[in-house]
Image (cartoon, rainbow, N blue to C red; front, side, top):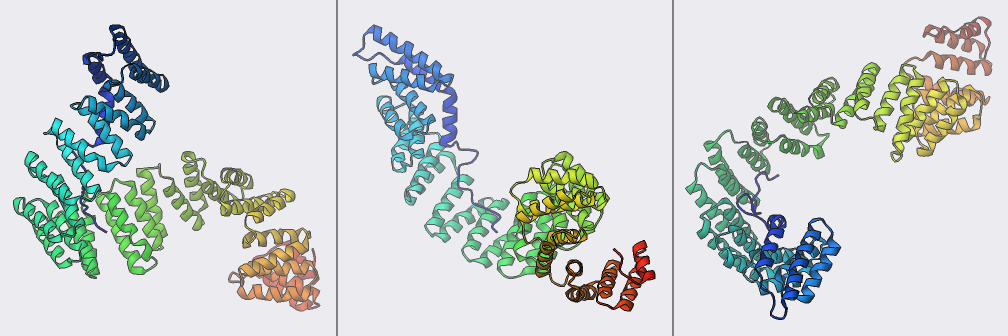
Length: 586
């Protein structure tokens, strides 16, 4: 990363062609009125024609000022039919064509205007703009020669002329113009930077460096010259020379953040990672370096993730941001991101909260916070912060979905449906979100005993993602509970196990569907897989296993598993009857 760039464009002491044209637009009406008043009538016109032209000109200017371009154009064209040498009308008509981006059409009008009135500066400026916009760069030399003739003390025209030479790759001619300009204005950073650009294009590294060394000798306390010189050395593989220059600058001003950033680049290129990082720490501790530039540097570590050193470095630099820029929400947002990358969720939550406190208008930070809260099963916080985010950003599909999940977890299925319906109505492109939302909708309708709506929602979810394993599993299980569409349920459950093998809850579902299909031997195989993979000692799985064993004729083993289900928390009356009566009961 190069932190110090040569700025070759014209800066504060120069006015570009475009700026001149903006000024020109504001004063053109006054100038053209004056030009028209002073211009004598053509010899071929009588007094009546001359009066008519003046009246028509004023009318055309009026139509132009009220943006009636079509009528204004017609009037100026009528004037030129009567008075072809009316340079003010040529100029105004050319400007109207330029408004319509018809620069090719404006050029001949302006060329004729300057031939009639060669000392009119504004005509030449307009012609220069027209040539530039139509990429007629080779014609600019004469235009700027004329502008310099008319106004020799205006630096802008010299810069423009040199830039034209630069575009034409006439580098030596451009250097001559900068020499003329320096005689006019004295040395300046703009001239220095412009020359640097040319020297580098010519491959004259020594000459470019020599000019900067002279600038340093003349202004030894100006850090920017050291930075520019080190940039030239470093970009041309002369790292040792660049380092020496920057070390001189560091001695001169140890608090310069830009020097520390440049040193970080040099040390990185020299493979001295520790020295480079130490310089970054010094730079990040400097509030004069913009936070946006620092965030871009942190982002440079992202491609190296999940390398531990890269994650740790980015985390430390982002922490320093919060110290150096304590009132900037962006500092805490990036710190939260890096904490999350380092699996420090609790600290990340606090960083995101602080960022929102400083600036609540960044949606992405709200979403990061709520995602963490949801992942940690903090449903109350998810609802609180999620609904706060929706009060600011009501049209965010994912936020509506996450709040819906939280309400569903709290068993308020009607409220959950309100939010998840919002999610599906707001987002029509994100298939992942739509699949998850319709799947959640199916869960909610199931718990509300609306089986028809539940099935429709699950089918909709699978239309967006036919391989959503959780949707396949839940849909299959609920169908089996109702003893409906068991073949469909079996296909979906089998697919969910293909997608996520060795998942106890999925294996349990498949075993239960097979049980409902009276395929008891296959059901036993899958239930034993589920028990082997079950880390929670689920009472439901022991009860299901007992049910399967009973139908396989193993009544004693069935009763033992029913008792295990009871020991693991299942206190249902039906289970109690199974144990007492030693038989399966629906």
